[in-house]
Amino acid sequence: MDENNEFIDIKALGEKFEEKGYFSRLIDMFKGLGKPKNSPEYKLARLELQRQQAPLIAIVSVVLLVVVLIVVTQITKPPAQQIFVTTVEQDKPDEEEEQVEEEPPPPDPPEITPPDITLDVPNPGPPSEMAPTPSPPSPQVSVSPAPVDSVHNVVSPVKMRSMVQSRNPGAIGARTGGGAGWGDPTTEACVMKVLWWLKATQKKAGYWGEKKKENDTRVLANTALAVLTYLAHGEYPGSPSPYAKDFGPVVQRAIDYIMKSTKETPRGVKMEGSDANEYAFLICTYALCEAFGMTKNPDIKDIALVCLDRIVKNQSPTGGWDYHLDKKSERDDVSYAGWAIQALKAGKMAGLKPDGLDECIKKAIRCLQTRSFDKGTFHYTVKAGDGVHPGLAGVGCLAMQLLGYGNLSEVASSLNYMRNWKPSFESRDITHEGKAHIGNVCPQYYCYYATQCKYQAGMKEGATKTDQQNWFDWNKAMKAYYPSKIINLEAKVKDWSGQEHKQGYFKNTDKYTSRPYMDTCLVALQLMVYYRYLPTTQTAAAKEDTEEDTSKKAVDSGDVEVVIDDF
Image (cartoon, rainbow, N blue to C red):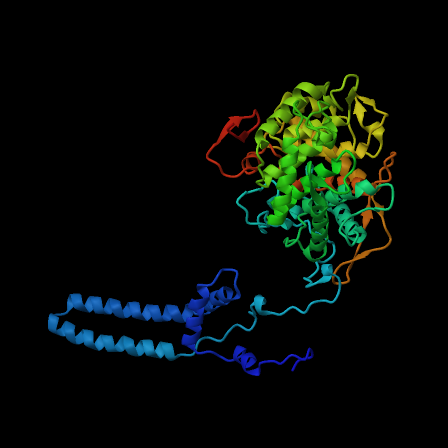
């Protein structure tokens, strides 16, 4: 009887340590090879097959030698002698085979212990501390590059090299080892501080923020942005990340919170707790689409597809989107549309294609080209007298790049418009026509888009020297600026093993300082741009964003071959 007052089957336990005979082991081996590849029986059979290679080769070689001798004898000897020799030689192999079979098998290597048989003792701590795995040594992230494909995150019918495989541990290490276009250990250290801070500040229900305060409606958006931040680093339930035991449960609770907030209403699907204009609905849909793309969880798929369908069906007649996803509006809010388009991109990459998705994308591009573009940037809306907003240059530019239209002249014009911008929390660094812009802007929101636009243009295949230099200059400034602005907390965060980790966050200096979660996540997403997406105009990224389909055709986009659907 064990300490839990359960009876132990001594006989069954003893059989596990009983040495089996040679033929019994062979029989078990062949049975195991017929089992599923992920089963313990199959893995043990593979080990047994490796052990039996030497004796099997010995047996086969003797049999082949005897067969050769028989054939040679039959050819060279007279028939009478051939019969006599055959009889003698047939007795010999039987003896040899018996001798080989009676030899004891080689001893099992003592260092090989199938891990699937080992029983883990649950840790009585919280869910994030269950079944721990070894914690990586300090520093937290190695910059020694491993093969980019050394870890395969998911097996999916949609090959998303531009999303999933670029976020594995090998790719992260390779792309944060320094260089003009990449990150470095300092940027990655900032990212890790943010991830630990988010873990420390998540509420038990899975969200971030304070529901009882005036920022109640930001809770849902905070949660979606945090999910996107973790996913960008390759953190999700069941990921191969060395931090999976700490961050995986955090992401799971956050996704569960978003899904539980999604409700069916007489007017369609809504998200409980969203802001009045439903920005949070768009950002949550974006997060759910990426989460499904990386986990292939069918529960996430069902909700993400319904939400994505609402975005597609409530596009305004002009091709834009407006508050409340009002499809009758002609306001064309570019800032609002930016999140809708990012959700569409993530959904398409994940293989989610609601009816009308491709036509929706084409209408969105036409809207940005013909109704909103002006002097290198975009109007906030198309309402008369609304004027241009400098920060929206990045929003419209990235929307075109993500949807596969990075070769358009509007993109080149926007990149030139943003050329003198600086990574900053100060609105004066977001210039308009070369002059400091002082107004109702949130600089970090615009820098989030600018970083991605400049990266997409400067790191794509065939990038011009101007676009390359534009990205290198921005990246150099970004790597110096943000690490100097992070707010480091004295308190450290313990992982499942008790090891302590530094934490920190970012805080904007403008009037929006009451939303540290948004600012922090947007900065972290900028510092992960190196491995979050491949440049979407690269052939690999463009081709693998969609499922294999014989109805697809290639068209020349001006940069590289981009694959689009027939309509």
